[in-house]
Image 1 (cartoon, rainbow, N blue to C red):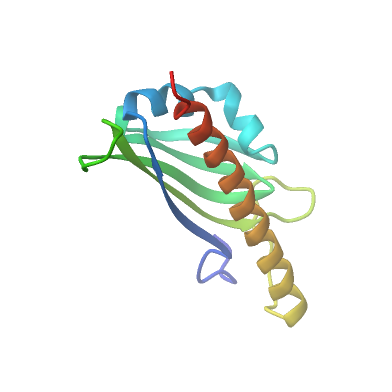
Image 2 (cartoon, rainbow, N blue to C red):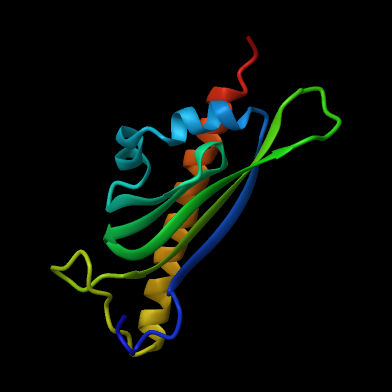
Length: 142
């Protein structure tokens, strides 16, 4: 890791309730083909397959770092019999121009802080669109 980094510039944690089982969720999340649709500028390599509890990845590409989806089954009183909390984490740094593995150095200027804010916001919104779409598809009434 570059000594200029004392933390991840992009550090996202999100929790979304989905009325579906961990089995249903992992059957979609575990499909390698879908990862490119969800994260088109990232390359994911599984370093932790937790079965129905989720996946952990190292990421390279536009960002370098790690990501995780952790599935937590919940037993709550709802009209739906099965509920899962989908925990999503993305901890990464932007990469240098022309590299998919070397983190970019930052001076922490106001301009760079705005760039990081926009990049973080773009990844948060992209994840929300992804999880809401998955939620909609799994929660459709039969």
